[in-house]
Length: 124
Image (tube, rainbow, N blue to C red):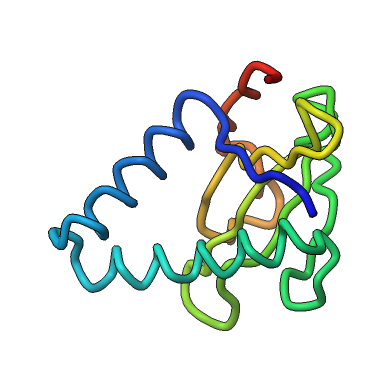
């Protein structure tokens, strides 16, 4: 099992705010659906990053840009602007850090140019 962590500051802030809205009852139906989909994805990721439903694969251009292997896993499929989760191993041995959540890029030529990822949290 991997411990799932959120990248700083963007992913940590996004996830904390989404969880608060869902648990506080103020989330929209769309936010609640997203929360549930992300939760399922994170559970699969913690158990097995190669879970078939995640369709995990490395994104070479992002790995080169950030100097660490950046992986992409599916949150959704077969839907317009299907969301993808970007993550890396670390900072600790058994950690996976989620560093991005983006719609699937449609622009094949410069697909990942616009994606900006969160940083790693401090190892604890």
